[in-house]
Length: 262
Image: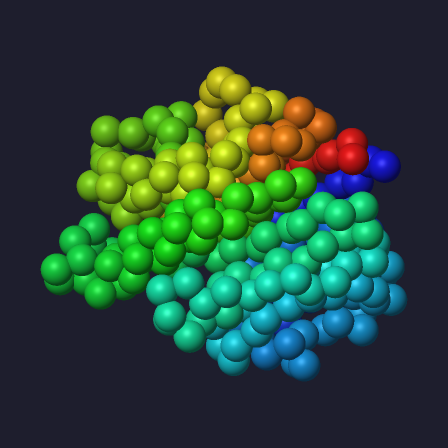
């Protein structure tokens, strides 16, 4: 079977319910993974999504922040939800499709403003979270799996608008990139987006602070789709739907897409 998948930090699923429905009707991915839902599961507009064809859901939520959800046209069952770094945050959910593919949906901590754990606890939490992800995937080597989400790190030089200027900015510091690389290596994960689009500047996030985000184009690729190496070659049709960042009252992230023949 071929199925399409999208990942999107929605920055409040209740506030942006109409945008989710617009993406569902206009693009129709078979599986839509959301992060930063900012809502308990029972307060998410799940009936509206079911009416749009997404009747299968696995999710973890919290009031006002964090929260991850997998909305699917295809039957899916929950197979895990881990509290990496014991933060007590709803940042991970895993579901398995009937074809045996496991989908991990992550919202990695942003890490605050200062890239120094000695003065910024949030940065230390981010590094600890990534370390525990690395160790978990080392001990539970993924097979027939997809990892998606807002990983809050732009790893490559061409994943940011200015590599040199961002080297000391949280999300692109060498220590963060090294931690993410370790997660990828221990799980034998393949960056599907860059497998399909190996060269060129590529962004999925643009700050709200820019007066004209589109003209300034100071973006970062914080949102990712990875596949375990046993199925990575089945992935294709990767793209980032930049136009979504320009919708009315948007999230600061754009959705990332890929398709899989499995």
